[in-house]
Amino acid sequence: MVAVMHLRTIAVMPEDAKSERPTRTELTLDEIAELLPGTGEIMASVGQCWWKCAYAARGGNWPLAAYFVRRVRSLQRKLAVVRPKYSGDLAAFEEQHIAPALAACDAGDLAGFDRAFAAATDKANELHVKWAKPYIRWTLPDEPPRDLELGPA
Image: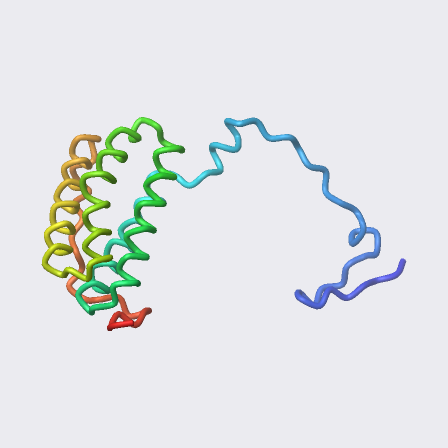
């Protein structure tokens, strides 16, 4: 038997293990759906983006603020696909709340952004109640995120 050293793991691997492909099982659509991120994972990402867009706007970094508003929009569109029961509310939220926040970013309008952000946050919390999750009440953290430069671009 010839042994081959796998450089990433520094493990000794027999030659036949290196060349054999694992047998792949066909997955059903239901099995694939089970692998998709759930509402909690998607909404945790939404919360991170929403937090970052607020502080980017407050810092005058309008391109970054707009980027994070678009990320929220994208994540919520994905949620509408994987959890269609929310699709109507998410479409209305996009039109009534995401679009004004994005327009304020595009205009560099902090007062308009703050109004849109507050209205969107209030509506999101109302939707949590509507969908039997009253214990989820999003609030803007007191501290800005530390992983990004939030000042003017």
